[in-house]
Length: 116
Length: 113
Image (cartoon, rainbow over all chains, first blue to last red; front, side, top):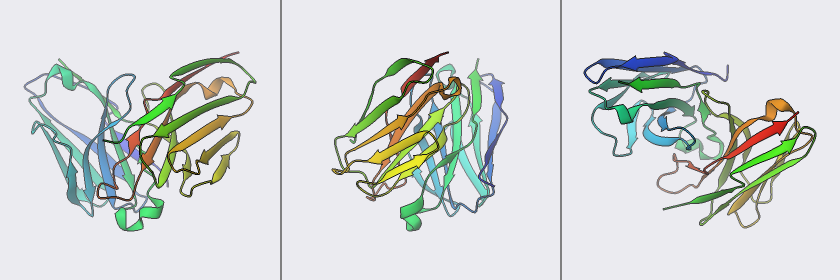
């Protein structure tokens, strides 16, 4: 199984809403990532989890709150977002850094988020 | 910071033609990855390269890791309509931030039937 799944596929939320994005992989990967992608731009890294611990936070605003409940799951909790946060949110996974020779990142299909 | 220059930015080709795109970096990478992204979908990994000079094929796709470790190219032979999409290169080094990929800005490929 070389698949990363993400739910929901689409999400529309108001600026006062609280919602969560979910990501799951069953490849035994121990590094998981959240990216944000605006139209016609490459993905931008937000967070990295390694062995279920937050390894990298790319100065992301606190209205985005990641969570890694176990080695297969990654969540992104959203609260009080702004319209400019509308984007495609991508999850990815890979082997962790100790296996640095083989850490291709596999991406999920993404969640298209619209903030009204 | 590291920058990747990916070219061309876009290209229109006739079905059946070969395609070539490349990425150059201001610094050395230990890994080069090539992804294809369809509209509204996540990037799909096409080819991974780990050694300078490495030439790897995946069907009609061929990619090479440049000898200087600062560049990579992707060739697509005999293009077909389903090759349409945005192709991203991504580089990674083994330094302190080695989880992080540096992405090119993408090459948008259009295939005319």
